[in-house]
Length: 106
Image (cartoon, rainbow, N blue to C red; front, side, top):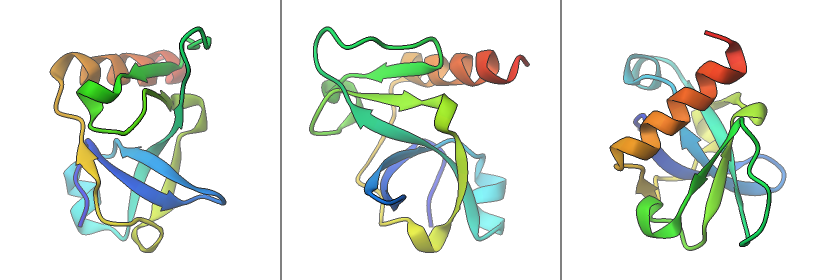
């Protein structure tokens, strides 16, 4: 079972880390979750308004990464590996939610 704010590897061809952003009512009742694909980022790389920088030290990931709201998708739980870590930082969570609101204009 996955929970909101978990970070897991997902079979997206290629397999890559994702951040679970759907609420736990969905995550626990349905066989799907909504995720944001993550990508590693290097110093100097551009971070777009619909992306959120997740520093490794705060995210638990091995590298600094970006959560890409523009690539949001819903995936079957069968495509998710067990959680690697969890995004616990409240400020980063709020930045992710802000980027989602910006993307969907809500």
